[in-house]
Image 1 (cartoon, rainbow, N blue to C red):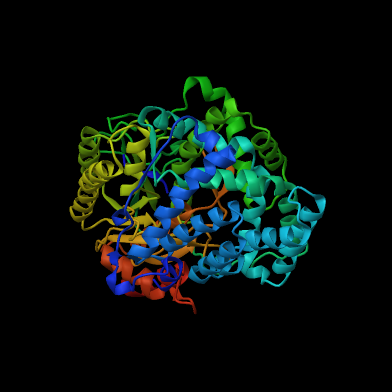
Image 2 (image 1 turned 90 degrees about the horizontal axis):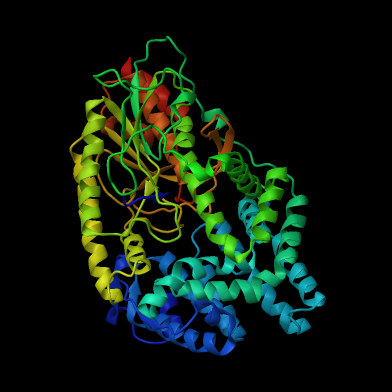
Length: 609
């Protein structure tokens, strides 16, 4: 299943060359050129060895600069990505003036208020501190970095940057050499051993790993302290705009049942007694396919036998991650920090795969809890996907798998129609680049261009099948998460988020104050925004957990759609979308359209009267 739990003027300045009119226009991320780099030996050696990295970085710089010089790129996020690569290369090569210039260009391209303020903060401080103190390993250098970052932060609006600072602190708290190098060792090295080369899609991982080890890891305690001091001095919680907008439908007041499909990783239905739709044969309405796109059974994916005794620990670590993101000093947060910070190289693979598995396993239940809250008329239909959790793809993309995926998409939707579903939540996504990356990791395709062609073929099969499935169910409203890549989901060709359909509503994420989430993707198909930051819901077994992502924003809107239809089952998807959109509020910056559930349901009630 293609599913994962879900920038022109400045380019000219970098390239110093042709006018935009002479450049080839890039409208989709997949249209960018690919490059290949020969690798002999260990990728880790490139990261650690100065001479080997210099040779490698020279090639990466050449190709990155050529793309900026020769192509007119329509997407600011992609321009930020390319320029960000040059910033890190400049810094690692000691080209500090160039690094500062490129960092300033990245900052100009930032679109979110917090990103524009925080962009380049650390690299400016590191360069200034080294120029003043000289020795990057000295206590004086670390103290100067602390002073410079703190001074900049103190000049920023806490309301705007607090989420970003909390996330920065959490990242610093868990960084370790094992984390910086683990993916390279475990996922990428086997590919290089077989192919003897690495594509430009995966090459940035080496640059990022060296930057983390050389620049960030030595500042771990400094950054944790700097961010922590700033947060401790501003213990002001954001105002919650959502409590006043919330609406609960009272039971027994004339509303009608509404069936909502949770198209996700499965649901612990024992947590929702009496809320499961039964099929014509009296059995629970559940459809499931495993990660190989073969039919499966069960409302919730089972945990492998050898990991079942670890479930309490894995749940604790999920809570620890959540607490870290919220800057909550809890026993679970402390355990996660210690666990990841002291991770040994041979422990990386199992640790990350177990955490990925636990995250996938709890995902659908967490989403279901959000989608059903405050609506006693909502009933669940379970449409279960099994998401991959391993570092290397399993299964690898293939024609057969793509064809099964395509058939299954229609099978899922036919099942939903058969069981009277009116709203579907889809908190997942995938792109053509995801397939291309998996092909490389699997050793499929001799060149980047060959993989590009194969990936496009498989992707179009699945995209077209999904769009056709939507079209076959005009009375069902499909609600999709925008994605968590902080980029334009249309440029990236994310599906379902980037698909245009009259019965599809794509949702971006904001926090409890309505401020744009750092991770949320955006673009022309993103119609409304809902709370997706530290949203509390249930996970299998009944524990409560706060999670962040557009995965949490999407079911807020599915929830609202379910309430609107419960008020008046005659509403069609276009009616529901119109009510949600017309009662939402556009923010002054024009980037967010905040849903207002109370206004929307009140509007629906008036129309139904």
